[in-house]
Length: 171
Image 1 (cartoon, rainbow, N blue to C red):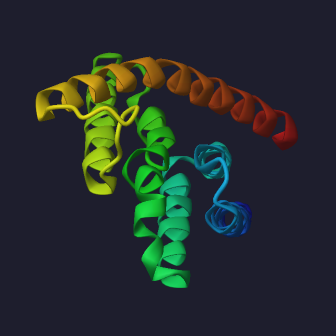
Image 2: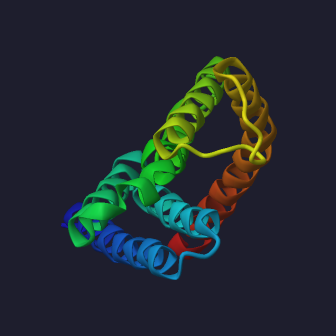
Image 3: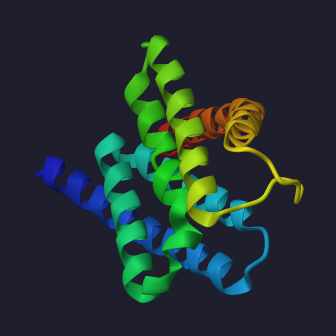
């Protein structure tokens, strides 16, 4: 009986936190200000779901947020592209890695590939300077390397903090 109660609480928590993450992502879409801030706060919702229920519930939270955001406003695919390609999946991948440090390199490559994909899909310009395709790739790889490490550190610290809070609340 206790196991069913625990599972029900995890599902309910994941549903509530998914709704909160969806609302946060939509606020970012409608305000149009500081997009990456809203992605990061939504990522914290996924980290919270991972801390409560594990990687599976974090993935459920990610799926609910992405699918419902696309259903609410179908034209926002380019808005949620960075969240869809990387920021939403990053905490799930980090929880999967564990002690396998060599996998960390694969996540960094995935991050840079996601940046390249978003860059090409949205046709962003870097400093309004015309660049050749090779120069564009080099600039995105450099930007990816410079932004990945602080972002990954912040997400890792948040995961540790949420795990500690959830252990204290469980007592």
